[in-house]
Length: 117
Length: 109
Image (tube, rainbow over all chains, first blue to last red; front, side, top):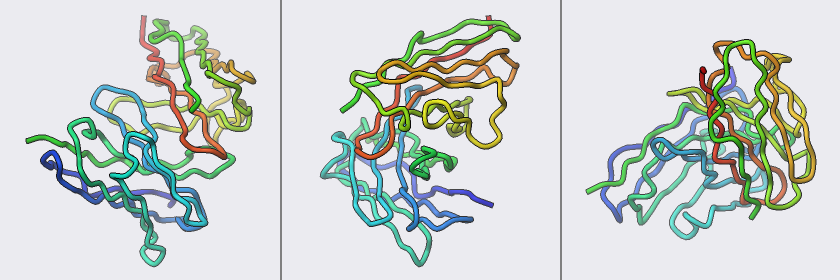
């Protein structure tokens, strides 16, 4: 079965760090574009970051310089390292496969990040 | 960065009625790079339409997408009870950043 399972969310103080994981099954992450998308409570979807199959990475301006996307091919897992966290980073973070032509076709269930003192 | 604006914010309709949702881009979007998603409370988004008009796997044919350039439409021909949800358009493809519209909520009238 093709699926994504996120983990690593939690409560963190402003200025703190957190690493999210997205474990894939049924397909190979290194052959796909893999994204993180977040959704603040009661709000819409916001694209955060992508890692291309070639390893190139891109970020939304709101997280550039603070977040880092990476992957471990041996574990078939994508990560999002989040530093200097702010209250406005509070959101449900989804991992999503971008099958290029067919858009974001596979989504995980999300992992919640709360930034609060 | 391309900004997507959806209208209306809320659409109040009855089961069996036709729903027409609009997505307008701040600059021209390739038709191969416009998608629509459905999201129900407590669930992840689900891909409905990609490439402006192609239905994703398993999506019923009452859902259809159309449009080009800066104006795109999602049509649900006859609303079923399970179709009441929030719908998002998205620009994707070659050049990030990729944006989502703010969403249209389709609610029961």
